[in-house]
Length: 222
Image (cartoon, rainbow, N blue to C red):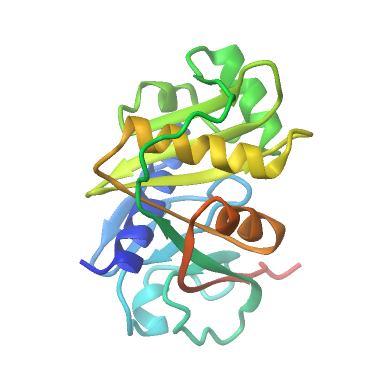
């Protein structure tokens, strides 16, 4: 499996965990992942997990007049009637030994902590308590600060997402989470996707760009 595919599968696993924590029947089909119902804010209805898929395969079962968001993991779709919402870059970093950064991270354990974490990432109510029991997921918050992040494991990689510095030094936050992954997952490649200033901070923390992805959106009429 190439690294971009592993990163896309990891992101689908994260989206799957989030949707299932809210009672959505998320599932994978050949080449795609689907939420199984209206996903929470900022999450897609479909994710491509293979290159060269047709629009018909990706949108199978989606009514023509329904709102829909598609994460085009390989940047190779042409979706008529959709707007390109944004472009980003897949990133990866190999473990480097977990150098201490002076930051201490705690894993979210309680429903109250989960609610505060969800507020920090700008999605109150977007995560169900079942997420706390998922062994593949670690939701992190910075002790003594408001910074947060999410980690999830799949295949031979660990994914990083929802990094919010919340007033802390962004470079220190990224370096701190990377060092934690080095220590906790020394055999796993670290993957994710970012854009803009977040991408720049990730690159300064030692991540490298793998390739592009796009998110497409179609609004429901009216």
